[in-house]
Image 1 (cartoon, each protein chain N blue to C red):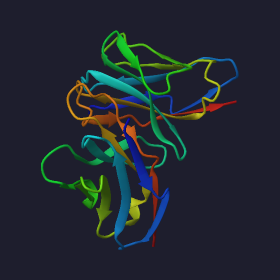
Image 2: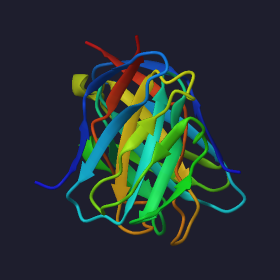
Image 3: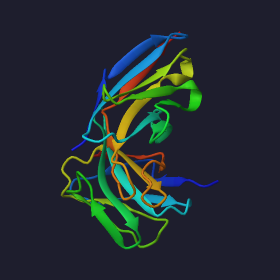
Image 4: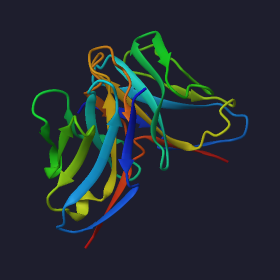
Length: 115
Length: 113
């Protein structure tokens, strides 16, 4: 079974500082990889995804993530944090191929941005 | 605009009561999903449906039931058998089996009185 580990349930950064949220997965075959963002009392919004091709993936709001097969990682970064980035972030994985209907989510990392 | 509508936003359940959470989508998506979110626990899949009149259990289906009589609707009933129903419930949909294109509703917070 797949599993996802997000290191750090809560990360605080200063406004303008680098954002780094860590995600490691456990899967025998490289899965599809996702990062979602959730603002309080709202649903999840897809930030970016890796399915195939270039391992450095760019998403919305200036975020990007790099798939590293050797490290089984998919860490999320943003060069300069903004106050509006304060939210909870979820890493998720899915088996490859059509017919895969399940996403496995990490437990989430709450990002605080200090002015 | 197309999207997923969940209602109500907040719901309260009394002991021994069944409650139903609504999920409607106008995206013409084939597949729909229900997730449960607990603080610090991420999201866990309750049920999913790939086509009308068909649905499968997810990881935590006990104490829940669903129906899929129409393509655009996938209501979730939290039964009295679910002893710890307090959570945030999220509905999602996707085009066919393309899990990489998952859209979420804004959620329903269920609490026990």
